[in-house]
Length: 168
Image (cartoon, helix red, strand yellow):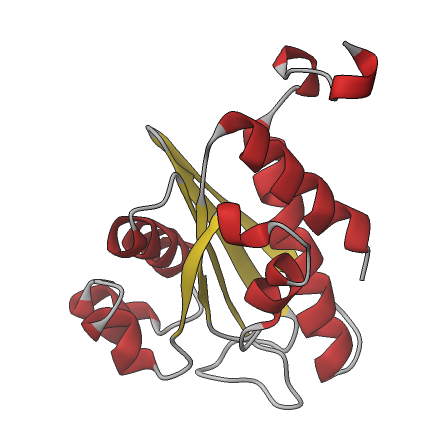
């Protein structure tokens, strides 16, 4: 894991006065752990939902039951609804979500390594499909980095931010 990614995100969100919440399936809390491992994370991390069971994605995060019945839990629209749902539930500026198949076996006809990560923010959401390789742990670790990188992309250009006090 690259600890600087999470630390950079926490710092940037803090400067902007923005917050984040996380909905996790295959990562099982690893995204939340990565963010909260950063000193000062309490200023920006609102909370998270570990919705490993498919029914919880609907009951807690508001993912459409019909969608889940049609496509299963590993789908770009499910990831987007998870991110939107956790953002709303936690009252955060940004919602992140992970869903996919870490292995060792396929699930619901979906291949090992198929992962969707999503970020929902003010006015927009983005979903990224990943085809990852490696063992279960490697796929989960790569998924954490991917969703944090997606938030990094969503936050955009760093040039509009206030420089650290030492550079003012």
